[in-house]
Amino acid sequence: MLPAIFVRSRGLSKLYNRLFAPLLAKYGLAQTEADILLFLANNPEYDTAHDIVEQRHLAKSHISAGVEVLAAHGLLERCQREGNRKTIHLHLTEAAAPIIKEGRSLQRRYGRLLFAGLSSEEVRQLMRLLDRVAQNVDAALEQDGMPLPPAAGKDKPCTNL
Image 1 (cartoon, one colour):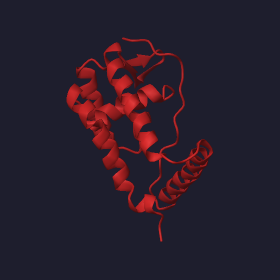
Image 2: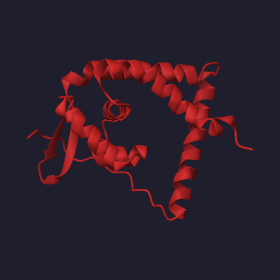
Image 3: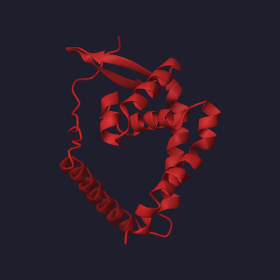
């Protein structure tokens, strides 16, 4: 029998989406668009749409569409690095700062709700174990003929065009 967390995993997303609903309504964003902003803010070592797809296992089409909307709203900029005009890097603008601030606050609240009643050590242990489970999932998907792309590195600082 699976632990309740795996059976109720959709509840994790439902709670997260419910917490974010007021923020999304306030700024006229979709959840994917807010997720893109927060991913870029929380993971500065990853700055391409490909990185987001790879690290979050989301559909390329959803990320591409979200990036288009965010760029159109002036919340992020696309740029290329010298010597590599093929890869487009994403940079958050100052206009995204209030959304990121509020979104991070919601992420912290989500964490407090999830880990209520657990000690700091229990949370650390749980995170280590869940990371191992995620590695097992990735390995099983690769064995099943569904290879996952390798983690991407980061090169030189970007210059805006």
